[in-house]
Length: 206
Image 1: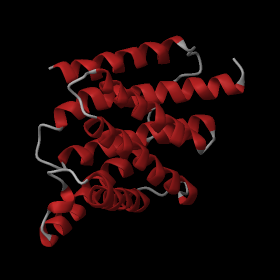
Image 2: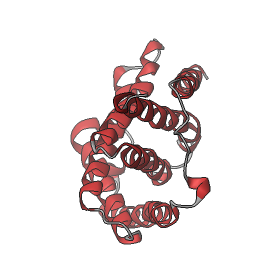
Image 3: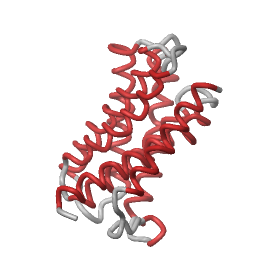
């Protein structure tokens, strides 16, 4: 397998796995109060984007992995009951996540854990709230919170997301956190993407 093929395989693999996570765990977390799901799903997205970057050595892998995950979200447009706005909001949020992680890898240094993790988490929640206020404007959103409640939420989100990302950065050499994908072909990513599509469409039909 050539380097370009390995690059594409890794993009499809990590993007597909992220898509499965969004369509399963992400779907269930959205039944919780507003804002809770992001505290967990952003670190999960970070995990897949960071692994794509590390496994390819290319910053562009971050954005392309997010494009795969966002594209899987867009399959919901195949269901007539779904509106473009309902589908595009989470897809665009995934793209915004990639911008924050892209910025993160430019200043991240090895052996740094919780401080950069807290900063990337803080950057993401700020960008997310601003995008809600200026672009998405959902009927229910974090941008509608009173100032004091929003401040508390931002601090709590930064702590939880930063703790999860920091723990991953600190212990990412542990075997269970690493995927040995050197022997993978395009079959594994293809099957994972099919699973993600089935889960996404299944959620829309429930």
